[in-house]
Image (tube, rainbow, N blue to C red):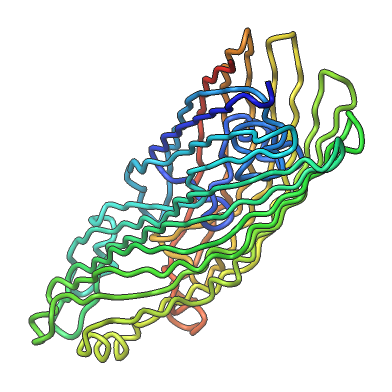
Length: 416
């Protein structure tokens, strides 16, 4: 059976983007989600190419399935985010070459963040013009990952994947003003490509324990697209310009352990670290010379981010209630890499405590799984006094920010 073609397909729909640890979406795979995302030391289902490519060596049956997620988002800066729907997904295909080597191909969305606000709620921020403008952001990454795993022996397996990353970066906001002139709506829409890699190790010293480690390299995405400012022509300047910028998705290090104290119970724990400090500032290079001069004078030729490295702590468990029914649960702490000095409605970020729970049902190759993830964001406040008197807060938006996220999840798969 190990030489039989393995096909595994999993599609995910995300009606909104949940941010975790900056931009990362750490809920790829319904089983991993229900176990709190503590999956690096287990990595024994279709999502292995993301969590730990070495886990591909454990896949030994033909499987297909689908699942969906829903994520309503609430945020407050004296306003509420509008409901937006951004599609996300994951698909994977694995093929064993022999008893030791498995090759695979994964296509998934590892990162994303988005927010959309009612411009009427932000009219006061456009003083003295008092106009309403569209305020939204959408930042995401799609990864195409061919991978390979090698089972050295019954104890050790290694794996690696090449990550071909396609990025999207869209922003709409107020452009600001000068004297009596309101510059109007600002819009930027960019796309770009970058390369990275994921390397994994899985160690099974006994049937009771498995230990995993994953290293994902940083990946610089070179974006290019167009920027427009609605009323810039009133100054005799072009209304649009091409623009280029680079954003580096961070290096990711993770280590995890899975313990089976009794045959019916699996307990997992992960430490996952992201080097978000690489997102310090984003420099924008405009093609049009007049735009270069104008945006530099306006201080709009770079975005100050000043993000910080972040460490997630995750725990999960799976209990086999019967031969066919599984109970899962988990918890994780997800600190925000975004400091108060640069927080803004377009890129809101929070310290999350998350609880997860789920059920799995397996019968004659059919697997049905449901899960829920509840992320409780800690409220954040930036005062107007800080904005007006402290230069460190020049790039922040004052207000009170809050967010809770609920993720219902259902998965259906079939092995044959």
